[in-house]
Length: 323
Image (tube, rainbow, N blue to C red; front, top):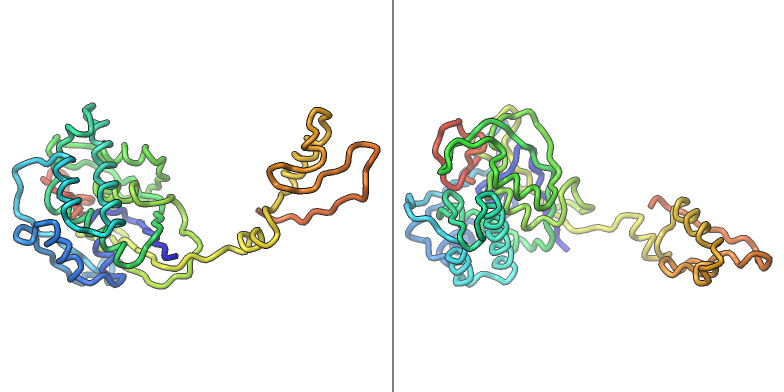
């Protein structure tokens, strides 16, 4: 089983996610085909280049889209995705990402999900960022996604609703929905855009440290601004491996800690627990015989068990914000 771990020391935006996938081996032609399937070949162009951030080389992707004056509602975006003839997994992930974003925006503005219109994140480049990321993960054979803790950033950005503090309200709502672990890297800029937050909230199985994996490939996706530390999203690709504890558990059954044993032994003493006096229904471990009928003492073995304004200068107008 192939796993993807998004390591986000300077945050994440949609174009950074696509760039990291390209760095991990996703061909540009796959992204161009996706743009065409979305019916956007005449309106969107992709530019890919190698850049350096604090001396480290990484891939940068720019989604160049014609300016849009109309706002898009969720049903329109979902219909476009369903008509794009994507793989089942890519379609499911794309729809889940936009729905998570719509739910967050709806809660921020106090309106039903169907009435949310997407301002910046409904722009064409955001659609390409989301769907391109989901298609790329599927093309690389990824089945499970994980993500690091995310940096909170700071400062202010300007958007259709005016000047907003960072993290912007939609990002905070997305984080709240999954209780995402956060960290402060000391950088006062928008480091996680709504598109980047929605992708991880919708796709990541859990947030925190990397899962046990045999590392096969690293993809480096650059943000569009230099920061005090390398502005690079690091995508780890690898095959799932079993930890020694899991392997032992499969061979010998669930492992029991000393605390577990003390808890079960206390339950043995209750005369009203006839099942517990002989065998644990949950662990299947033999119990002590009733008082006065004890056999030999049993021994147990134990184990421990968006094109982003993140970092964009305050006061700048942004579309699907890139970092």
